[in-house]
Structures are given as structure tokens and as C-alpha cells.
Length: 87
Image (cartoon, rainbow, N blue to C red):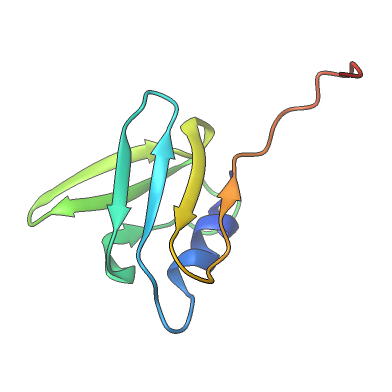
């Protein structure tokens, strides 16, 4: 997953809520674009999701397994790393 994948979900017009799924099974609903803080592309592999007033989670892009939304919005699965083998 890249910051640009998540940034594209945050910047959609009109905004639509989406869910970030993590490799440990947790998921985070993003119901407003202000509830995600992303670094500039390439600066960091972490980002912040505000979960409730005065509470947040610092998440690793490497642990995001997917981003999904309802409706016509795009959804992004995490990129799989090429192992160099045919499968």
C-alpha cells in the first residue's frame, strides 16, 4: 500500500467513508477526510488515523492489507511483493 492509494480515498469528491484493514485483523473506519494524517509520498511508512476525540493510532503502510469503501469509490488491495516465482 502507498500513501497515494490512501490519499486518493481521502481526496475523493464527494468524500465517501472507507475502511483500512490491517494484517493483524484490526480495521479502522475513516468517516471524514480530517481523520487521516498522511506524510508526503516517500517520507515515511507510517500514518495516523484518528479513532475518536483525542485518540489516534499510528499505523504502518506495510501492515495495511486493503482499503475498501461502499458505492462507486475505488478500493485498493495491498500490493503483493514479487517473489520471483511463477504461481
